[in-house]
Length: 231
Image 1 (spheres, one colour):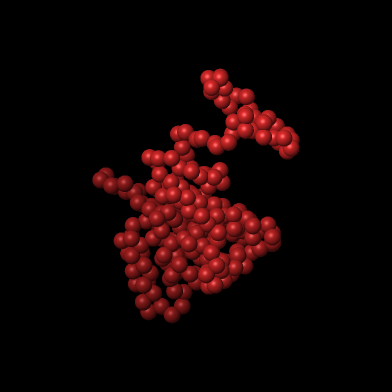
Image 2: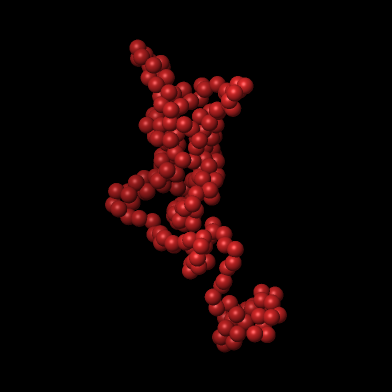
């Protein structure tokens, strides 16, 4: 949902500049970024103060974010430029949205907005990776059916699905680090395990059961050791 919010902000800002401050305020609080809530609140207060008595050329949160000057810190503290870095990332995504495909844009959001980094460090990594893979597969299928799909059309389709309570197919695989996880090869994408056992991949089952010759290659000899073969 957070990725969809970022895409919606990009779409609205590309349509009417400085029109999606409500979404931007929400985005700044996402776990993908390091901005402190107190800093965001202070920035929002500064926007309100600058707009007192203004009827034209009013300030927006996006404009205020762009005007933040980089901090050098001092002797006792490190510089905090998290808001400025977030602004740089979002402005770059906004620019790229007009030059690349929708599928490529979603890839950039995942990479540049720290989505993937957040997922890889999360204790819910296996589940979050499944959610991300399912969402991205939906994006790929949509773009495959219509390569000319625009971001606005994609979001309209997603919002229509949400309105009618139509979910993207997703099956949760429960995993634990201290135990045996029975999962498919597809569901294991993005996961790491010290030992992996592939059921049915033995030379006896693989070669002797291939009576129809529908497999053009044999079981690899180097996949098991000599001791295992003798057993």
